[in-house]
Amino acid sequence: MFLPHRFLLSIALLLAVFSTSVHAVLPVAVNGQDMPTLAPMIEKVRPAVVNIATRGSVDVQNHPLMNDPLFRRFFKGFENMPQRKEVKSLGSGVIIDADAGYIVTNHHVIEGADEIAVTLHDGRQLEAKIVGSDPEADVAILKVEQDKLELTEIPFADSSELRVGDFAVAIGNPFGLGQTVTSGIISALGRTGLGIEGYEDFIQTDASINPGNSGGALVNLRGELIGINTAILASGGAGNVGIGFAIPINMVRELADQLIEYGEVRRGMLGVVMQNLTPELARAFGLDMHQGVVISQVIEDSAASKAGLKVGDVVTHINEKNVKSASAMRNMVGMMRVGSKMEIKVIRDGETKELVAYIEDEIEQSLAGEKINPHLAGAVIEAHEEGGSQFLVIASVSRGSPAWNARLREGDLILSVNRAPVKTLADLKKMVKFSDQQILFNVQRGQTALFILIQ
Image (cartoon, rainbow, N blue to C red; front, top):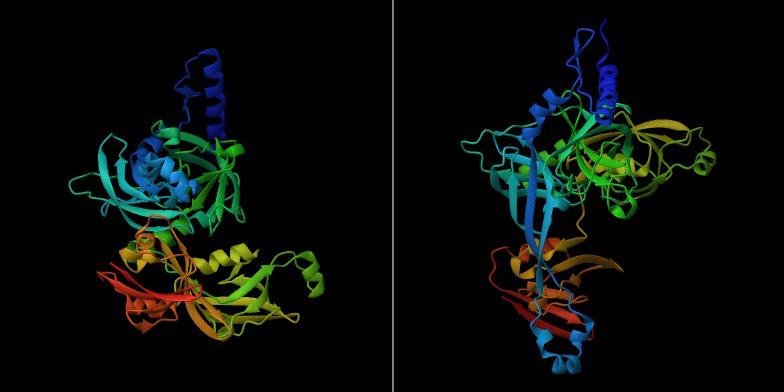
């Protein structure tokens, strides 16, 4: 009699527990049939999961007393305290392209890393470089030189076909112990609003995921990659309590393509402010619905306004997919490239309407200084508009950074750069080249204007 694979897997797990408790030896067959095991699948997949160790440094925040001249006078030794400290991180990664040497992991695993070492399943250690990283979705792509190396990659599944109750296997490097395999099921799908990442659409699993598993593989019983393990929910974040989260592989693939092509994710903008359709709002709009998104504001001259979206529209579908919540809609828009066509179905005044929008470039409101020029590293520059006037402000400066050492300070209003007036981030990018050896800033600080030569 043929038994379903899942039923056989359940028998195997029960027998494994029994054999552990009585020190028995499992038979190789039952009623003439081989005992079910995940070992063949795992043996094929494990070489594609790597351990990642990083080394970097971060700024050390001085104690406020160090700003007191009297304190510095009597405690001179403290002036020589290091301004940066070394940090290390351990995590996991998955080889997704053996020919090109591409590895996917979490952004938080490699954030701030100066050196990245990748250890393969067979113990070989390779140096890796960052191809691109997206902190909003916590995904990063690394590259290792694969010349004359035989790397193994994991085939992708279609994570849209996952169902709650499907078996899942997590592979990673928990607590730096080395490669470890745990199993469980898919506990939930489409988890959002957790506040873990900017863009969330998590797979929830009860397969044990612990610190160090981040960036590792979540696979199905065919050995196909269904997600990248990224977070746990536990008291104090100390360990696994049966609630782990993984980024669906379909979402990872979209991000990986952009990270490999551009080195960053170029998200577009629809141009709306939205909120969940609550039961109270549904009654107010005369709708017999429990899920959807209400448009509460449409930004002028945006993709949404050009498509004809209006305040009060209730969005029910995007590209023929149900829209259940504002966070889900934000994810849908955030995963689309600039120029992508978006078919939007809305209910307006009780009637269903179909609109078409084309995603436009996201309007930059802030920019990290190091993306413009290395001399501006540590500064965050923001664009503001007030009373019809546009202007740029230094939003923050990290103490001890190149921008700090150049005497830029939080709150500085940028009047001109290289003697040319600047009002927008686009103006600033035009005036400052990444290779510039010196930059002349004219800033207003309080009631005083001054020139600052940065070199």
